[in-house]
Image 1 (cartoon, protein in one colour):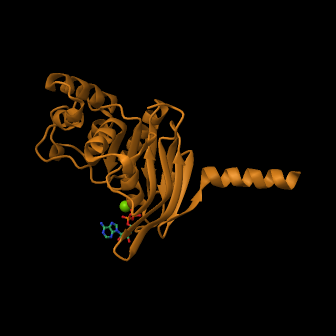
Image 2 (tube, protein in one colour):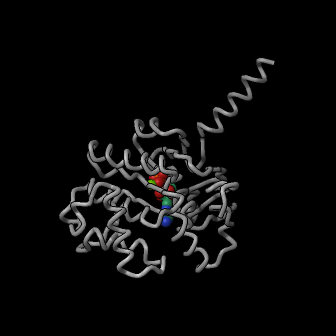
Image 3 (tube, protein in one colour):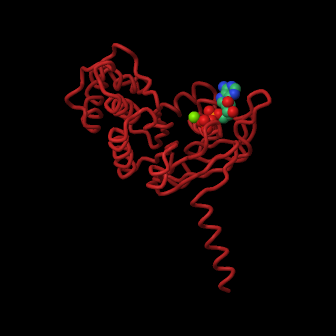
Length: 240
Ligand code: ADP
Ligand code: MG
């Protein structure tokens, strides 16, 4: 743990499923405190890349470093610990268990922490207040709107204060107003220091983020950060 190394470092990462190449030789470095969009057509490899960054899946080749740890060198227990302490996940379909009150869903995000149940619930309540759901603590998913469900899922993702938040189409199942609220929340978390990666189909959302990485056919075809860095170098070269 430290600040010198990138939060995410993918080097030559490829992933194949049988004869399908979902991701081909991806290189990506994300530094602490960044917020970026990953965009691209359906089937281009975005979720594959996010799952590999999140250590939910292993690459077929290449190396993945998360918060300085070479993922391939970790055993299952170390990997679970890294994931639990470092990464929060948000998915398009919320993934909240039916019949479970918001407070318990969020408190479950701390199961790995070893903290007692009472304390987990106190911290969970704070996280729900942080996302504006202090009045919905005991609501179950079927009693919540889509936007509220996604806010519960975000509270669960950040309840342990992970430095990295990975969101796969977090507004994909929401109406535009709820989507806006969810994006505001992600911006707020970013403002508070969390590194945030957002997969999105929404051009406006992508354009509103500080960095945009475009994926097509399993390849990173454009990265606004390295792209502009290259452009500056070229401009400098021309100026000389
Ligand atoms: P995206 O998130 O950009 O829509 P994905 O990363 O989900 O794309 O998928 C990239 C490609 O890999 C697609 O062609 C998809 O069909 C394939 N793929 C993804 N996951 C699997 C899997 N578990 N088994 C087989 N093929 C997969
Ligand atoms: Mg996807």
